[in-house]
Image (cartoon, rainbow, N blue to C red; front, side):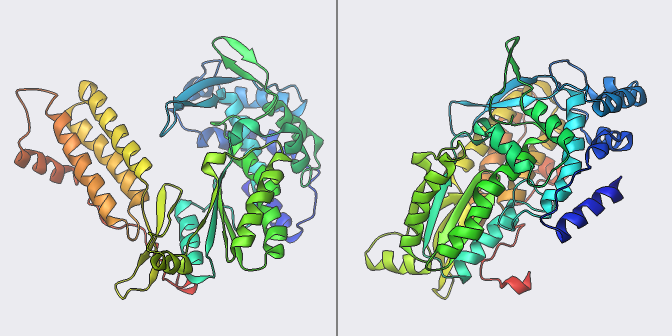
Length: 441
């Protein structure tokens, strides 16, 4: 099965205009479905039917054979997604998630494994989100080196308002049909998109959008934005710009870099019309054009002003300088993300002290701090990481000592416990030095 999918990817790469007309049998293949079963996590939330992976696996072969047969005769109907809400960072609002039933997750993963090799062969290099062997650090690294080494003087930040809730189904199907000629695959995806949402016991039809939380949603969102933004920028905006132009996207977060202000202003103006043509809209308060780069820093200094900053993927980018006084792109943890991370850590510690032993609480805190540092401990961000480490350590000390009045830690005892679990240190873990040459990577 893996070999067949690899061949599909190779053909898609060699023949970028080929339309695949026979794919559905890969989705219905029992071996593929079995592989999807083993890839799914055991502890994920259940859908509307309440079936867990363990329960589904009690009659695994029979369930997979039945699912394959229903898929083959187009008798499979996805169940509505269960609506759940999680806190939205930096807001009182909550982000809606759509939780699929376990069997639907199997089919979603099978479709993703079948289609992903085709689209990976055609996606532009400017896209980094939810793609194999690509991540935020690679996107940040490419952005930093581009601003540092290319002729960049203006940045356009943009934010799509409620992207996942406003994906237009008609456009989505048209985009899929550029590469997928198997109508059974298109019909299956259409059923998934329109399966509906169950909330408070009521099922609401899905007329637009793709639910966050769905296994297939990241791939579908990348396909949608590949045609709406990536190709448009790379094949039209870049060629029509008077100076140099660059573009970076991670999921629905993106920004563009320009040499000249006129190109930046024109892109911002055209971007609004472009998105509206595909039933999307910009968030006015989160979309702006600003001067940034080597020349911008020099101009700001001449005016007696501080160079402007922008935030992307959780980092505030600012115009810094090397020890010798030369321009350098630097990053620090954004104030918003820093505050959110400490608040989340505090809330976890408050609740964990009631249900976890001290040892389990120490190990859980270690995982959380390691997760924060694994992402934010990058070049030039040591100060913010040290500050986070300092506060997280003291928050943990405070709430550990509130577990019991009798067995409170002293600082010496607490530090011995931290040494015992190998408490992470705030050292730089990702080299994102923009002065590094591309060929040295």
